[in-house]
Image 1 (cartoon, chains in turn blue, cyan):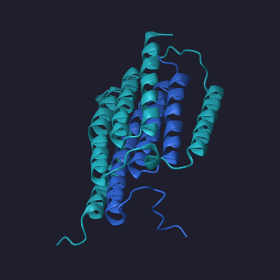
Image 2 (cartoon, rainbow over the protein chains, first blue to last red; image 1 turned 120 degrees about the horizontal axis):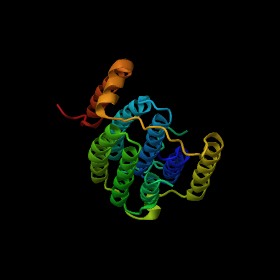
Image 3 (cartoon, rainbow over the protein chains, first blue to last red; image 1 turned 90 degrees about the vertical axis):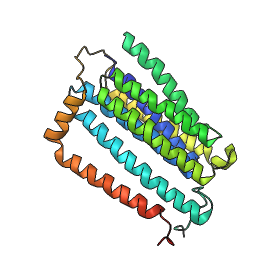
Length: 100
Length: 166
């Protein structure tokens, strides 16, 4: 078996890469991609703990996370395309309608 | 180190390189293609952890559907090319925060989990065992997820249709 901290380290690398991407990117689609990286890190953790605890529950929740991620990307891209249609830009630092 | 761990390290290095390229690529389409690499390595990690059903769902949903959605989103929004156009001015702060998150997580998991190998039998995540678990213990969350997907579907249609449509 693969030792648990090895898998968790890989997931931590993926998660912190996603955090960097969310903070550093200004294109909204790339921000969504970085969020996908973070969700994948969580999924890897869930499956690793499912093996560690000898239960299949973690894999069930990984499937739920995948379903929620699919819904999130669908809604997110619809919003991004709507913003592009209205503002001609999808740079998250130029969309400041709610900023006072 | 077992052969599984050697395979895992190779796959993890490939996935890490792909993830770094996703957040640093200067062309948005390249970023989407590197995302395919990282998502596929995650699927291989699931296979190495004996979670075959989750691995195939990962391939189907993520690599098959979500990346295609991303490519459509990129196609419809005419993204520019170049680092200044895609990244904002606070890359340094973002790098420090990312490094801090990794440092914190790494310190915590070093502290919490031992490196000793455990020789437990892996639980087989086949479609049968995962399906049994879903429909015995998690029926209500499963129904909630299907309502969520329906709501997301309707919401996406409502958001993206033009107002002047009849």
